[in-house]
Length: 473
Ligand SMILES: Cc1cc2nc3c(=O)[nH]c(=O)nc-3n(C[C@H](O)[C@H](O)[C@H](O)COP(=O)(O)OP(=O)(O)OC[C@H]3O[C@@H](n4cnc5c(N)ncnc54)[C@H](O)[C@@H]3O)c2cc1C
Image (cartoon, rainbow, N blue to C red; front, side):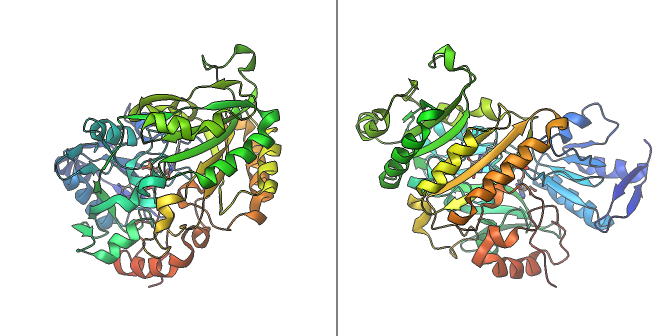
């Protein structure tokens, strides 16, 4: 094996000689992958194809011991590292150029304790892994709306989905985590142990360590829920969105309704003439008695002239996979989001206006319906600070061809800018596409406390390749 040139945190190159690499390999239960390996490209590739960096070395960890070994090895040479969970970071925070990628994606075990109603999930598991195991017992943790997203990044940033109005963020349901520190030691953080750290990892991202496992409390969900899209022509969107907004603001916490302007996929429920046209999806989700749910959502279903109505009773796990096909890996992506306490008519008109000009057939404008139990906590209770908002609006540019980068990026920026006066001025950390520089916007009143925590747990900024909180020591 030839020596490997690898980058340090200070952007210098060090040469790793063969015997040192073999020595590392022997200490691992997982795999060591370098750019000469056949599987290198497959392993290093993350969800957003805009991010095309090449780590010099990848450690595919098989367990906590490998993670500790990886951190100690990186510390020895002061290496630039990136930590990969599910690989869904829009900003590409799980990839680095020329450094070491600590890849958790083989660490996907999920163990449910149905008696205690808790689940322990390894740091590289996806939402689909989690739902698969927990739903076997009719239980669930609030998670995002695409099943291929990683539990790691999503939870550490907060993590919301259709269950969050009832049960809060994914992070709100954490009981403890096992975490490998910047010193390569494994510690537990919970309300009792390292409680300052436990506060910080619930919204502060991977800034303080590598979480090898998450312990969540579980809730009875489904297994059947009411879910599906009511699909409208975009020309009806101004009135439909106003009705949607009014309904969503009054909905009970068992119900959440996300809406999306997109180019219609060829769904069997939608007459063929509308395939490929711009449409508005209004997608109610209800976790109580489905018959009660049907009664509740009548004002949505009976409004205007839907082109199709796909609302149905289905397994919760199926509802969680329902939009996966719209968000496949390997496309180029650029997103920017705003938080809203309310959606005034002006914002709705802006959404429709930019929806009429979607820059590519895969782009969309998503309205996430939050509030409810998320807002029962105070902004300072956990590092996730956005406890007053009801909606997040995200124009998402998606396309294939690198030659086409400029149009969707411009469209996202303009749409985002057009909504800014009605928004709160803060954004969800996990929806920020830029690598650095918007930390105040993401962490708001909690930023200073997060810097203190960074000074304590990672004063040398080893976990730099994140939505990084910069230490001041
Ligand atoms: C298609 C899609 C749909 C999404 N839907 C939602 C949604 O419904 N709700 C929502 O809240 N968010 C959603 N998100 C945003 C998502 O929460 C973030 O992209 C999140 O960072 C993804 O986590 P990951 O582990 O997959 O990503 P990665 O790219 O692997 O990691 C993201 C960041 O977290 C760090 N990290 C990951 N795992 C660990 C770990 N175990 N320990 C320490 N650090 C870790 C990484 O180093 C990196 O900084 C979505 C994203 C995508 C692409």
